Amino acid sequence: MSTNFELLDYIIFIGYAIMILGIGLWVSRDKKGHQKNAEDYFLASKSLPWWAIGASLIAANISAEQFIGMSGSGFASGLAIASYEWMAALTLIIVGKYFLPIFIKKGLYTIPEFVEKRYSTNLKTILAVFWIALYVFVNLTTVLYLGALALETIIGVPMLYGIIGLALFSAAYSLYGGLSAVAWTDVIQVVFLVLGGVVTTYLALNTVSGGEGVLEGLQVIYDRVPERFEMILDKSNPEYSNLPGIGVLVGGLWVANLYYWGFNQYIIQRTLAAKSLKESQKGILFAAFLKMIIPLIVVIPGIAAYVIVNDPELLASLGEIGQKNLPTVSEADKAYPWLLQLLPVGLKGLAFAALSAAIVSSLASMLNSTSTIFTMDIYKPYINKNATDKATVNVGRLSGGIALVIACLVAPFLSGIDQAFQFIQEYSGVVSPGILAVFLLGLFWKKTTNKGAIVGVLSSIPIAMYFKVAPKGWSSNALFVDVPFLDQMGYTLLLTLLIIGIVSYIQHKGQDDEKGIPINNQMFKTSPLFNIGAFAIMILLTVLYAMFWS
Image 1 (cartoon, rainbow, N blue to C red):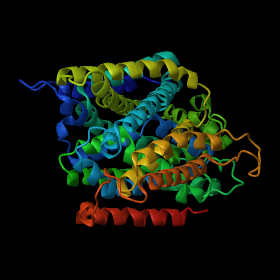
Image 2: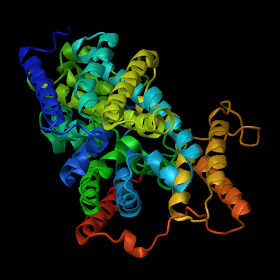
Image 3: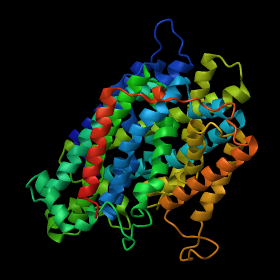
Image 4: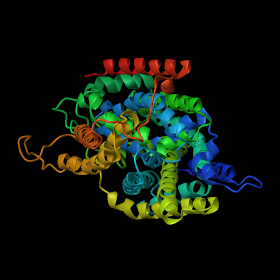
């Protein structure tokens, strides 16, 4: 164990763990005389209030990939990575206004279920397999690896033990209690997450300013590295391939965000569990406001760490502890764990509990959604059509456990990957454009056919790989083109939309598909509160991008 952690830190961390497990198991208990059914387990009995939905959305979203991965990208490239968070706030508004009314009206359990109702069982199964593979081999494995990396860096827990420990912790309540346990513990987790993040940000900025406070610290890092406050990077920036200039605002980032927030089971599942559509939309709005502050607690610390590491006097003032595990641009994901070891006794335990909360809540959410998709979209239709509620819930628990074991076996092989946040985005971006195209046209173009959707989603993979496997250095006139992965996602979406449109038009000669969704303006009416909140977020975003454009 690392000597940096002292008794009070361990007490705070263990107290946090006991509290989360206790609350998770308490809300998971079977009510007297009531056997948990599928709606209880997978949709929290459709009883979540807006504040629980908003908190749970953020807790599910913010994980090691943000705290460690996004701080690492902040260390390596600066504030430009915050576009993922700030653009997500605007995306949430779009999801709440235009997607949720249709999803909730159809009474969905899973996103693949929508595909079945709009298209066919065959396409639903194809996408269900896509999602399960993506959750297990990209999302779960990366969160386990990054979480274990933090444990190893901060308190000296070997990587393998860290992976196993995090897996067991998240499984202890989420597999037993289902979405209800995950969502209600997320309310507690998000408090720890924000509080711990604020503490770490304060420490980093106060250190940079020589004890003069946060505002002075912000001014210092802006003066020292103004280039790291450019939101729109030019081609000369070494991180341009990850954040390709104006393409971030008008291209592939929209694909990543719309797919993630609108059609990602482990995110959208919370909104489907709301008491009502209005309650769900209020939760979405709450999450959008929280997204606006996330860069302050995950990206700014990474920039501050870069300034400290490159200032010999500041680094020397930190003493012996500050010389351990120093991050570099080539090992940027060490930035956040390095900052945590500088916190004073007690606060270190709190900040580490916050990081653990982010990791465990995301793991629990991914597990619950993986088991939901497998159980509702594969087990019930193909293996046991007459499964009882008890059997359905048990299969959900078992499939989640198997997914977790596979992820634990794969996670150690990610060792050596730098800027893991970018890794997740890049590999999710192979499948997300095709899925997004299927949903967008399925929701809003009644002429879209099942055949068009299947041809489109299957062709999207080779299209994405065509852009992705281009040999480095090949010119755009060669057989392959070499483009940033966000641009690749944008091009893949446009080509997939075109393919689906052409196939659908040829098949039905321009006639509406029988499963097309009838929509009207009344369906998308939102409350005055939602509208005011949406306008406030758009104004704030405009101000931020105007300030840090270049």
